[in-house]
Amino acid sequence: MALGTVKLGKVPVSRLIIGGNPFSGFSHQTQAKDREMRHHYTVARIKEALGRAEAAGITAHISRADHHVMRYLMEYWDEGGRMVWVAQTCPEVGSVMRGVENAIAGGAKACHLHGGMMDHLLAQNRLEEVPGAIARLRKAGLAPGIAGHDVRVFEWAEENVDVDYYMCSYYNPQPRETHAEHLSGMTEVFDPANREAMVRTIARLSKPVVHYKVLAAGRSGPREALQFVARHLRPQDAVCVGIFTKDFPDSIQEDVRLLDEALAQVAAAR
Image 1 (cartoon, helix red, strand yellow):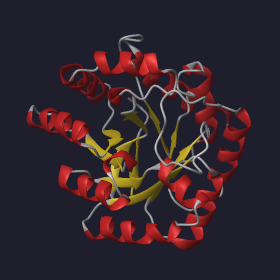
Image 2: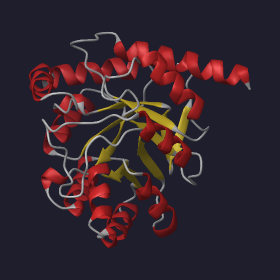
Image 3: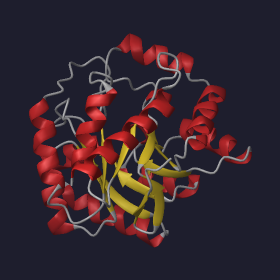
């Protein structure tokens, strides 16, 4: 793979990172698709997908700091897997600090605060809860980060917290004023205007960014989507994509190839 690596703090990661939403049954499509993903992705199949990603040159995995993820990663590592875990706190397990402690205990090298939680704290004027979680991660030796779907999260973060990276969602599909967690079955809107607003924000941010939800949860074709990513991926940035190998068995290798080609095209045009 010619994609190269970037660093989240001191943690080197491949520029293409494999995401964990499908492994946990978060399709961002329908409740039926959520169930299909959960039934398909046994621990054995998750480990197989991680192994294929590693063989394709991917060195990092982003997933939720819950016991399901920690279990399959423990098995993956025990069996020789080498990808690093970039953890994401998840409101379903409890407080922000509960997710942080799970990430620390589970062997993560970096951890970011959940995007829905950050959007929710912003809406509820409760962002004072964030600096303590960031400080705990840094004290434990993890690279701390912040995720979000709302550009105002990153505008606030630039002025108020010292993190090593950001996770910037191209889309803001669900309102989070009343809840932090993703609610399966709710209508989700993937508005191209959100994508344009986020990449304008990314261009101004002082930290490395992991671009995510770039395929609009399967609504965008990977070629177009990754070409767009390549045009907006700064040298210090990476991109995270989830894969559903039941529907697209070769999606890992295809995503690597498409992003590699798109980055080469961008470089040649400059």
